[in-house]
Amino acid sequence: VIEGDTHHDEIVVQHAARKITDLSLEYNKPVTLGISGPGMTRLEAHKRVEYGKRAVEAAVKLVKRLE
Image 1 (tube, one colour):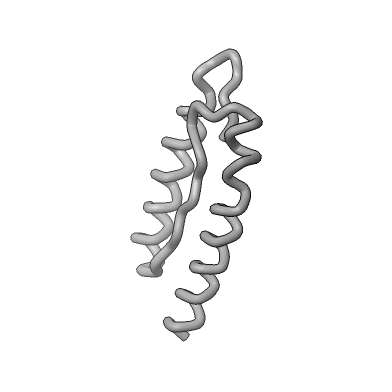
Image 2 (cartoon, one colour; image 1 turned 120 degrees about the vertical axis):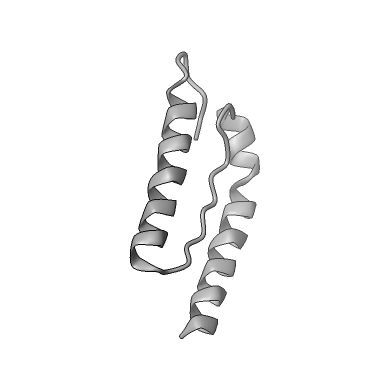
């Protein structure tokens, strides 16, 4: 989540985390959440793309183990 002129990046991150947790509890399923930010610049976010890829790979492995 990239920082802008307002604090919307913080609001987006907080609500996304809360709703994903709600869904996990409602459906009794584990979830993963990987959000870079809030407060990141575009350059900082770009530098962390590889971490995002690894997070997705870890989530896929988790799902396969749970099947």
